Amino acid sequence: MTRAVFRFVDYVVRQDRAAQPTRAAVCVVGNDSDCGATSGEHPDEGPVVQWIAQHRADTGHDRFRRTFTDYATAEPTG
Image 1 (cartoon, rainbow, N blue to C red):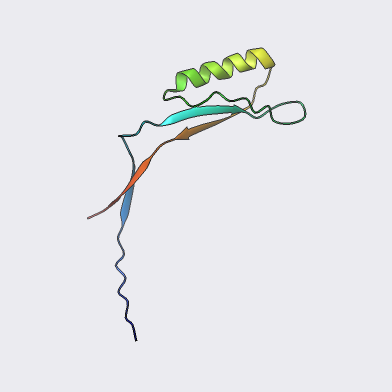
Image 2 (cartoon, rainbow, N blue to C red):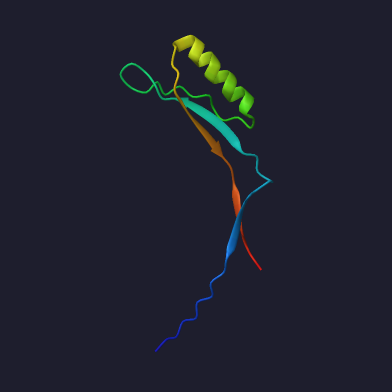
């Protein structure tokens, strides 16, 4: 018979400050289907906000899906 010993470890998950997060927006409105136009990824929110405003002015589209992407580390506690 084989015997197993399980050791459970608690972890804390933190944003990895060595990697820069990104932000983006995608237009999710249109006449028959989603527009799909995208702002592209940016390290700061400003260019995404400007892209949304310009896309709204150009097309009249007013609904966007925003994303925030980052990297995380899992470190054992204790």
